[in-house]
Length: 379
View 1 (cartoon, rainbow, N blue to C red):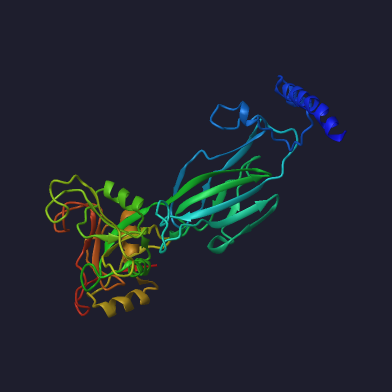
View 2: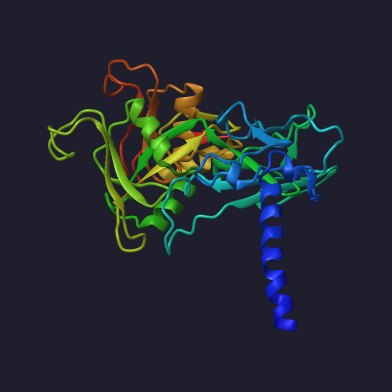
């Protein structure tokens, strides 16, 4: 009896299922079925473009920046623009959370490896009137909030290591949109080699010697800009991403050959501990002043250090001299000691008896410390 009833009902069930399917496929039928909504609506995949994409059909969160890159000077304040809005504008305010994160310049575009783990660092998170900043940015960052939707990041007291790519991420429920802004410092790239000759630094030693000269290892972009400005140097040096390169504006033998076009010659990624090269350092403007100390007599290195101290200053570093030359126009045709034991002088207007016919920082290398020169001080 039971099997007979099931046999009679089966055709009826099939007919009912077919009718229900037909109703669902009719235009507007889906609107008759109650559904959960959170203010966002997406059309069914079957109503897409045939490639499995889902069309958006509701309030949309947009995050934008009018400037993909910003440049500033060291020690100044800078604003990284970021704004968000909705299309269409919602009728009631929505609760959003904002997170700014940072990818340092030496990791932007660098391949991830065991030696180089490319990760973003949190700078600030904010929700409503509450905010929290992290690490070296603590106490130096805030949101501008000059208008509704303005989440621009203001960074005070810019440091050499602040360069890189910043991400502005706005989170609203299930919506999460972001935009990036690159921050660059205006400065100067200079090659640096050891007192004992060229090619003596591994990667970490190159980082340290640049830091010792009030600089950082240059990024590829900084070296490329320096090459565009005329930097020509035939010795290979470390960059911040762990590559080894050198800039050539005049092709010649021994520097890649005369058949190669001008450009950056690259050795690619090298072993950061085993391989040894020079360094390309980057220095930005300094708050203080670099000056040539007027003294009745020339000085050996020890006397030069003492003379700056008596003048209320300290002997200048190489990065400080390069910054003063490039960014402040320091021009002096007098050779002077620097803190690393080198002797140099800055020329912005080339002239007779002051070295080559191009502007630049002239170098006497690392003479014996008992020889007598002038001195450049920093206050």
